[in-house]
Length: 253
Ligand code: MN
Image (cartoon, rainbow, N blue to C red):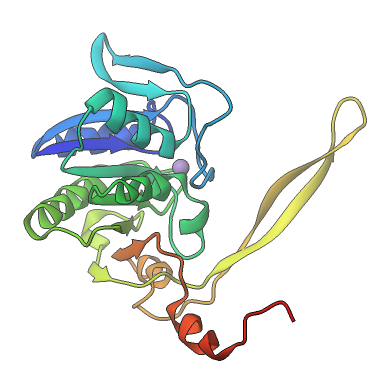
């Protein structure tokens, strides 16, 4: 099984190292990841400046290809110009920080997997729900088992699995749940500060307004120590509204 591993935290992050290590036990892994951290860049792609590919070594041993672009760039150029053929699966992660609820939209981790789905390659995004993760080993195990399930059963074209793992010791994990995207979203705060030249600048922070209270949602499931698995796709059509507004007279007069 040919596995392409990417992420948004950059090729030097411990999460991608653990993911590549875990998945190399079940397949032939190629790492193609951003040269620098690209968290929260969403599905951005690079069009106006060139891209470079740099070979990345760990202790003198080749680890993977660093692309000086976005996560979506890594998948696009990685499949076309490095692998030169589609892998059997793309796995993106292991991300530092949850990609539940609205974070799915902003996430570079999910976007790498989503780009794979656009290119008709089955894919998985995997994140751990903390920004100071100490141990990615359990998440690596989860990734391995879900890759095996996808290899056995396949996925609908255009669909990817978004996996979130609670940041608790393995023995505290209550199980793995199939979930839907939650509705929690950010109450943004732009902190205003002053630079050394007395000009103001702004730094985004904020609080997540947690409205999810159902184990069928990704956000609530991980909060309650369950691993969450959500199938998502890139078709943004609202089919309910499509039916509902069919009766509208869409015209200019
Ligand atoms: Mn990240």
